[in-house]
Image 1 (cartoon, one colour):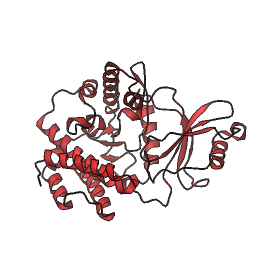
Image 2 (image 1 turned 60 degrees about the vertical axis):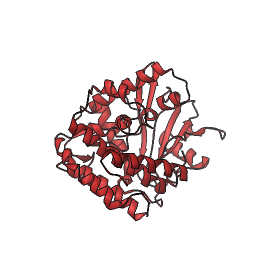
Image 3 (image 1 turned 180 degrees about the vertical axis):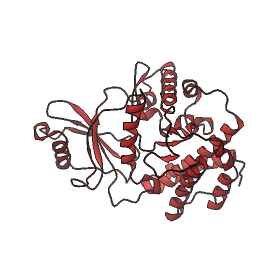
Length: 328
């Protein structure tokens, strides 16, 4: 996936990063030691081969001069906090961190190096037809089970892991949603709807957010392409930058409840241990679908994505508004 936020580096700089992380003895010979992993949406990602043959993964945050959405600043640091939290307080596997550089001394961004997990990316393998329908269903159920274990972690506040936090989920979610709308207004993104109409759709249903009284750890972006699968088991969860303390129903694996362009959520729900949703849960889920749809639409401008992606995102926002009783 192309995005102007991807902070690609020259082979000379990649060599310098390897030297800083692993020492001069691990700087590889030749020019074919780095392979860009291009399926991400935000950060630059490389698989590197060190001199001793070991493979690792380098992740680089966006460059300092690229405009980001309000909640995207410092996301790599949020990811690092999430990885530490998951490692300490759950049995869900995350890659080993080898080196972190937050100094800005070598390049104009945060970066880290982690272990390379030698297992298929679940989403890519499923998309390529390398898994049977039964294997895909088992994979989503395993992902839902991993999500259940993650959401057992209780946080000290609602909102970002490192704070500043909010006393209520309604305050946290509304502030986050308003930030996305403000991002869109600042960049003059045409939502296909008046911004005030979108705000009113949220406000008209926001009372159900008060039913969430305990801040739970949520990955937010726990979908198939952010997991590695082997023999039906999740062997690694990656891309934790959007993690927060909030309502577990906001998780990406449930998006298909409202937007049918996303995978059938039934096996994820089984693994997660959720049955039929209550009226409050359905209303909350629809608010999170609205939040996601607006985010995906505004992102098309901040990422420099295609007109086709923009049209697709507009269609999802139309669906989300309709679910909240809004018609043109």
